[in-house]
Image 1 (tube, rainbow, N blue to C red):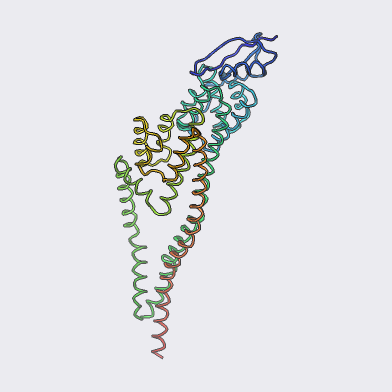
Image 2: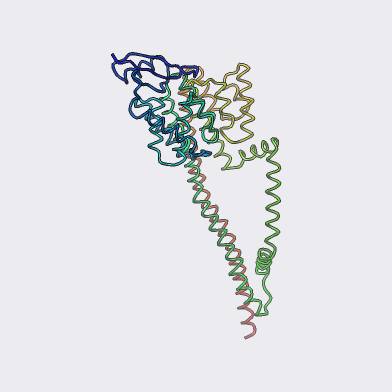
Length: 418
């Protein structure tokens, strides 16, 4: 029976090497996985590399100094990398082989450079999670800790598949919010552009004509002229005021107290604040369910979730929740005094805690609030366009009224002279 030498990671992340006998390479990998190890490399005892893995490794080592430094990676490329790696590991490949194949398969420069760097780190003796920690701007602590949990439990391919699903859910949620805001944004830009053209091009030409008539202009027309004069002559004052307000805002929000107050205010804005809160409910439930289901402890999960919303007020509330859990409270009871999530959310969570199906229940809660978020977005996106149209029509209507008032006044004056 053939003999194989292998390198793998045990539950603690330590590098393990050994020899096993198996009928073929697939059977050897199965034996290693039954020991709860994560296979990194498997070779026949003759020392001959399996396939092209060794030559690929040598190529990576020789080209390592030329590798591009990967600073950032888009969400789509991160999803692609995770999905491809999950597929290759699920097909029975080792990490060494899978990363070597990704180097050849992924043609996008940043993805290829990332795969090369991770492969080199693996050859140098690091675990995958340790290698991922070298890229904090690409892989979040949540991502890295889930990979570490997969390595410890010997179920890395399954963890990567769940991460792929999680990244897909997060991307879909963000895309829905962005798509709902595209049409209203276009309307606002078009409306503001139309008003600027009216006030800076058309109104001055018409007003010059009315001024030559010698007729006294009505109040609405004089107000329109005053507005036009202010816009064309003193626009720089508005620019200075806007710059000052922005500087004041940055100075205020750069302090922890200021950021806390501002983020708390944002959550109370009608429409926008509601969307932000429901987005947090869905992300919190989905991420917590995924983490707990993959063996991450409750306290570590809460620590990873502190920054999930990007909101300082929520982050500070989550710190209080984590402290309460450390003191012995259940998560639902710890959340209840903070008014961070709705009562329905807490009641469903409490049921999951009592039945021992916490991870499954949190995923169910995520589905509930993702549907609620979709409904909120649909309602808001349906209301914004008519509101924007009404605002634009009101401003344009005032401009037209000022012009028509002057025309009517001029016509009346001419009739009186006849």
